[in-house]
Image (cartoon, rainbow, N blue to C red; front, side, top):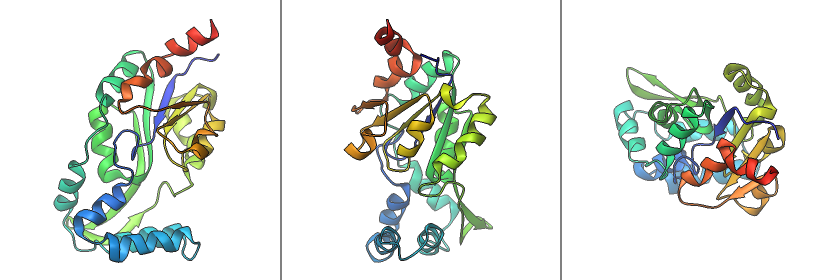
Length: 220
């Protein structure tokens, strides 16, 4: 079995226990029931595009200060074991990345804290540190597979040398494209696309698998 040289982590629901930073912000700002949830339903029913869905979300927050949004996302905890896991993998020489259809407002500080080599997520638009109602979509709802070549090139690895860890429907299409797809606390549909399924509240459960120890034992 080819050695894994890089790991791409999903963020919402994987590195953190919160499944959607978008919904978390909506709920903290009191805009979920009347705006966020309705926009999500419209998107899932195919009545609006993903860009329109994101635009509506961000428009609901227009005028909010950057510091307020940063304070809100700072409330989101890391999943237990995240720092130990990423430190162990880095020490073993692996490259690490975050690929998220969430927001860089959360991805960037998490990536810095965990020593990630690359973070890719969607960005909010600000004017004079006030949210101006715009959003830059870098990772659409089902757009993660399109970002894999760039990530591999940046990290200097082949897809066969990459492990992807995620819990959502957006992660599932990545699993067959890489050397190791790990469904983490995922639904049966997502698990069906993965090479391995893991259920745990602590990310350290993944260390033997991602570092090669567990896979070597299975091969041996």
